[in-house]
Length: 271
Image (cartoon, rainbow, N blue to C red; front, side):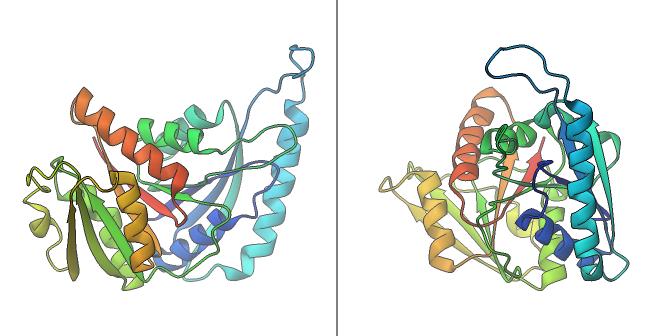
């Protein structure tokens, strides 16, 4: 995990997403790139194009430069930081740049507040998750930073494409020496369970398995309750792309949790 992109709102880069990216970078000796997507603004009152892009770009660079100066002393183990602005709508632009520049992880907050707009809402995070092939760490901006000591991996009935899907999670577990709890919510009680190869993919990792059956709660509610019960510091889910119907169900669950999660959420890609 040598290159980490932090997708940031140009008006406020000093949020918890940056703090988590620095923590990760310090463990892996990574480059952290603060990246702000500058979208052509429109006048909400007149509905006409207002050419303020240069001003917004300058504001973004000034804000990110200030953050870079403030956190420079926190970087260690060879970790570094740079800043970039790119033109375009946040979701597609983040996805495109992350792929083009060979980043290993995208980190983003679920909210970005500004008088002009809300840039990084759950909908943008969901757009990135659905269209990238990279792992995405979604950090609620209201969530205080906590060292990663306990992780919940939520698995469904979809099979994994292979052990590579879980490698970003395994890297984090090893770096933080974190505890892993594998959670499976069997909502329909059909007993199909999870991918039987999972123990093989988690070989060498100490973990415990928790399976809950029944329809007393939805899958998303079950995940949220498990995070709270075990006081997890990180939730991990897998975004599958295995056919239309499987993708539709998985996408709905992931999307609901992105909006509702009170802890950082790592979404792994299984395309």
